[in-house]
Image 1 (cartoon, rainbow, N blue to C red):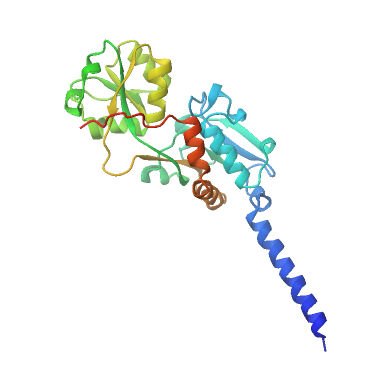
Image 2 (image 1 turned 180 degrees about the vertical axis):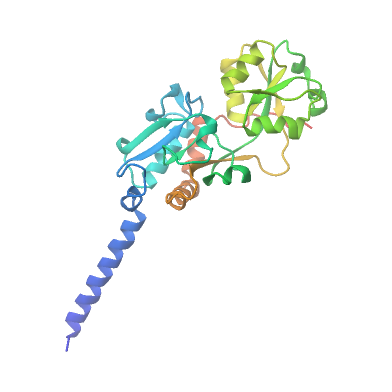
Amino acid sequence: MATKKTLWRTLAATAAVLLATTLAACSGTSVSGDTITAGKLTIGTGNPAYEPWVVGDDPASGKGFEAAVAYAVAEKLGFKNEDVVWVRTTFDEAIAPGSKNFDFNLQQYSITDERKANVDFSSAYYETAQVVVTVAGSPAASATSIAELQGYLIGAATGTTSFDAIGNVIKPTQAAQAFNSNDDVKAALTNGQVDAIVLDLPTALYASCCELDGGKIVGQLPTAAKGDQFGLVLDKGSKLTAAVTKAVDDLRADGTLAKLEEKWLTADAGVPVLK
């Protein structure tokens, strides 16, 4: 018959094994085997990637809100900075059906039911609003309401929530003008092809102060509830979705996301809400 001492040793050994198994399941080691390259975490972003989301189009620097969020998520998953590999994709191809060349991708993807049909999303790492931007000398520069904007030609990047907001919220008398990227949108405004454009709030603040000559924010578009929620995009049915979502949730709970937002994204700054 086993002695009490032997029994306690057996129980202690069993507990140690269970603890080790639990820790391994919660660490990056178990997640690493589910990434597209074992031991590496491959993260996708835009080509180019814009400020203030990525500074200097260099996500590996960790500078800019999304670059910093990506490395924070990687750390929660158990990956060191040197184990992160960056790849570039267009906005549309990352959310199209089919296998991906990344473990997750972030370039301001609003979480929508339509997109969920093709890809998985993490929980939201950022929530924003849509903003109307113009330049001095544009007829839209004097607008103070949605009604006053309705007669103007307004543009945004195709396939974005900003583009949808033109038709759904502003409802202009002329069809919304679609462009391939935010760079094309800003160029169209500068060249007078459109009277105003719609961007997400942080991009609008940066563009109006630092990229557009005579840039001016007209105001925020109202929303029925909260603003757009940005999530990390993963392959449909990815084994990483639950772990990545937990990482984002933990970063929100411990205050990391709020600190990164404060560091890299300009606050509301009193931008008026258009009515």
